[in-house]
Image (cartoon, rainbow, N blue to C red; front, side, top):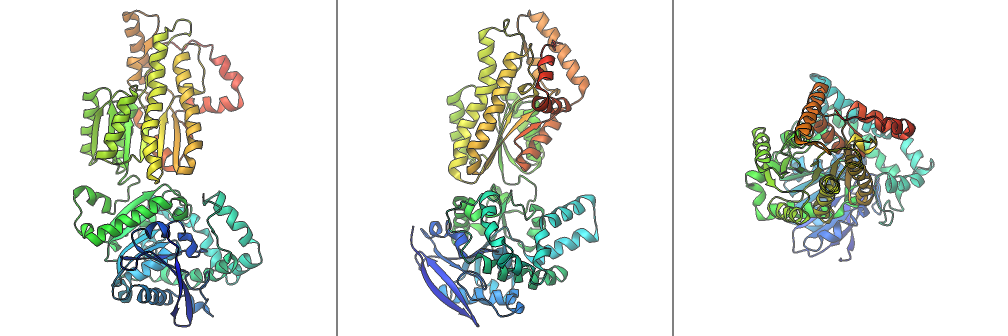
Length: 588
């Protein structure tokens, strides 16, 4: 990785500290940091970009090694635009630059990208965790003029996330908190622990106390004025790439619901990251910035094909542009889960050992507008699952969400269950999950953009039963495996959820093996089980909805039905009760 060169650029009476990496003959990207950061927030991204691009980062006025204005007016967005133009004139005279902003650097960069005097100097824009104040002003107006329960909930949700904005606007309050109140001492530990920012990257900078105190004036000078009187012409005509960290605790993804109105050439991406994505996921951020610049420089961004158009479109659905793979997708929970993700904008890869049923699921997904690819694969075949993963990655892409759902039932006491039935239930219920995780988790990790794995277990994972030892053991193993994987993959930004349904009306009741029974007796028991589960009226679509919600919220363990929740609680507080219940014969 190259070492930067340093220079100072004058902007009126302000001196801006600028660093440059890479070959100046290449396209130039300008990185703008947020609050209370310095250009050091780009320390993991800039050198990577510089392998192919001329990279420029600077400390904004009042931060790091740059000088600070004497009064509040000096923090106006107009003055910040003066700074960007001064930097661009110095580092890329006569050639537009590619702009990247994070946090308040993104707020500023929206001004640069939409202001008439500066937008012609920008070839493309990538925004991370920072909306335009003008766009937010219009977003709030639209939802207060014609309020609905959903719009009000989203307004209140963002207001809750933005509590600190009000504190920033108290004259002198932030200055005292940063300089004398101990905030500068506590903040580094907070970002390291809560925001997953590694502690050895030179962030926050040693100038944090002054940076925090000075930067609060950005809020005080601009937020109220722009939200109350947003510009009507705040349109960014250049190609815009929006990167939305899905775990951002400060900004709701719904703030960007109307963004295609203001950025007609929009590419939207989601990243499994907290707020400081350039430090938590620098590989993914670097790759996406590079891809965006390459597309613009080559002219491909102007004429995307039909598949790419869906990625560029301003689709605000939760899983728009994401790739979801579901095993056991031919029926029941697997089918409904695939359809639920498809309805949220995902492309779905459907896997089942029954080719006709999985093809039917694909047709249903396509009817609601999703891209669907069915594959006939047995999850117990490790080599076949590896081949599937290689094919999916090569032909479609790395999976964003993996749902290991395939499973079978076996009922009967331990002493009556033949060894071949033990092998069969463990092969499908446990090794099917293991094979899925082994085949698809490695590409997720190598890509560096996070992801999510869902393993479907059962309430039997924490409710023992004398007539379900093989089934319960397989599902308990899936639960523990999920917890282990969650710990291992957390640093890669990959969440792992174990879903534990209870009594759900699915095909498993019609295919369960009742050991030690004749064919006629098995048919009768399966029919009785199906009738009992059917009368319960808890369909697989309800489990699917909980799976989608669990991925959104990164839940670790989700008991689905009331009886599953009761058993989960009892396993923590009253395990003796579950042991007594385990003696009850639950055979229909």
